[in-house]
Image 1 (cartoon, rainbow, N blue to C red):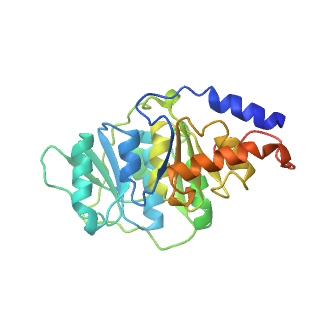
Image 2 (tube, rainbow, N blue to C red):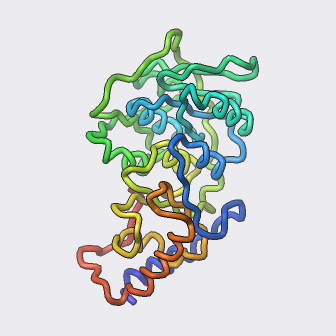
Image 3 (cartoon, rainbow, N blue to C red):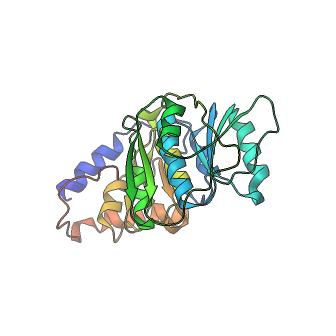
Length: 274
C-alpha cells in the first residue's frame, strides 16, 4: 500500500469518536442546517440564524464557529421548524442575521437582530475580528471549513447583494460557549456545494471538515485519504452527492481495494482542514 495511504489509514483509525455518533458513515442532506444541528448538538444556549442570502450565511457562519453554536437558515416555510429547534436545544439567545422574521414568542428568549458591520460582531463577543473576502460561491465552503474559533474572522462575500438589516436591529451580547467534545468528533467530509450551515455547525462543535473536489473516493485522492479505513467507522459526509450511506461505504472499500493500482502523483501530504 502507498505509504501516504498507510499513514492516512493509521491517522483515521486512531481517531477516538464519542459514542453519541453513529458507528458507521452517515450522509447528511441538509440544506438549512437542522440535521447537522441535531447530529452535533444536544443542547446549546445559543443558536445562530441567517436568511438564505450568501452574505448573511457567511456572516452567521463566522459567528457560529467563534461562539461554538449551531447555525440554521430561516425561511417562512420553515418557521415552525426553527422554533422547534430553539426549543430542542434549550437556547435562550438567538443571533439573527438578515431577514429573519421571528421570534418574540417567549420572554425567556433573547433575540439579537444583527445591525451588520464588524463592530456588531466584536460587541457581541468581546473579541477582535479580522475580515476576509470570499470571492466566489465555489470558495465559500472551504472558507467556512477553515474558520478558526481562536482567530475570529468575518467572512464577506465578494458576490451577491448587500446583507439585509432588519428594522430595529441593534448590538447585543452572545454568550460564548466552550467546544462540545471536539476531541471526540468524527471526520467530516464536504464539497464546495455543501450548504454552509452544516459546515459551520460541524466546525462550531469542533470537528475537522475536509472539503474535497469529488465525492467518490474511487476517483478523488483527497477523498480517499480522508475516508480510508472508515467504511465501518464513524464518518459524516455533508451532501447528497456522496450517495447513500451504503453507497459511500461500498465506494470506500472499492477505493481501498484498487489503491495499489493508483498513482498519488502530486499528493505529498495528508489533507488538512480546508
